[in-house]
Image (cartoon, rainbow, N blue to C red; front, top):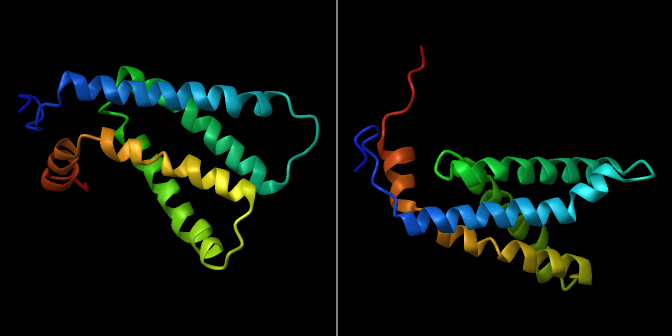
Length: 139
């Protein structure tokens, strides 16, 4: 237990695994998303612009996770959440209808990499900090 928060101690190995995940997110999105954000010639369709901006922000915030892996856990929750929702709401119905195309299948594989997030998150810390601990005061 840490004396300041009463939360369980997270191993140094787990912290480095989290940092590696944040680096992977930041670098991957820096190479994949940021060039198109900076250098796009034509106006994007609305949702393409929204998705690219959102992913760019995730990549930028992942840089903070390298220094503060536990404080940036909500970013990993978000990453896990959007991938799970997309797989269930978008990909699964297409798969059941036998309408998967190559682009959708590629995104399925990318989203299934979210399993790494499941493995890296220190769930004992999450439970103690976000479930068992008292919430912030309301007034």
